[in-house]
Amino acid sequence: MSTLGRPTLYAPEFCEPAHNYCLLGATNEDLAGFFHVCTSTIDNWLARHADFAAAVKRGRAEADARVARCLYDRAVGYEQRSEREVVVQGQLRTLAQTIHHPPNVQACIFWLRNRRPRDWRVAEGGSDALAAARATAEDLAALDAAGERARAVALARRAGD
Figure 1: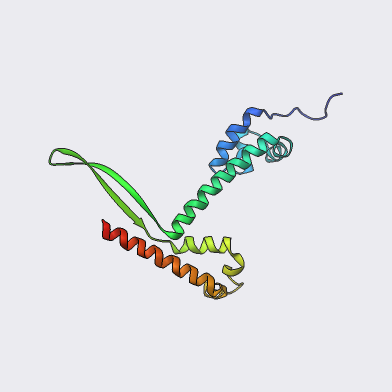
Figure 2 (figure 1 turned 135 degrees about the horizontal axis):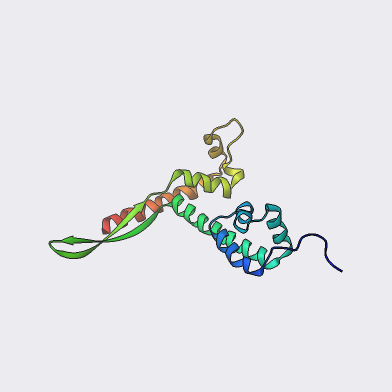
């Protein structure tokens, strides 16, 4: 007995490219364009082919984790080591430099609003000050302590340079 409808275009070889494309942030619509199928076809493949669904899920999880890590670094500040080669008096020398990127307030707000929405949401028609006022004293003390530790580390590193 034959199955109704058109034969599937799916092939198990699609898993790796789907995973790799999802590492770049691909949506189901993006995947559909990549494989030259409709978005509903991607939805069907995700529902019917566990290997394809796992590859897509794994790629998206890895991409999300990388972005979350970068957002966290921006929120709390980070150090970046940079090396470049220059010619000094006819000799090639390598210069090393540590660049301090201070915490970014927008990244902090974004992180906290997504991780602790009840404490950091903006009330309808309200301002950010109202949302911040809802945060518990414990949360504010922890943030203040983290900021002080970051400042102390930055000052110690600058003193060592």
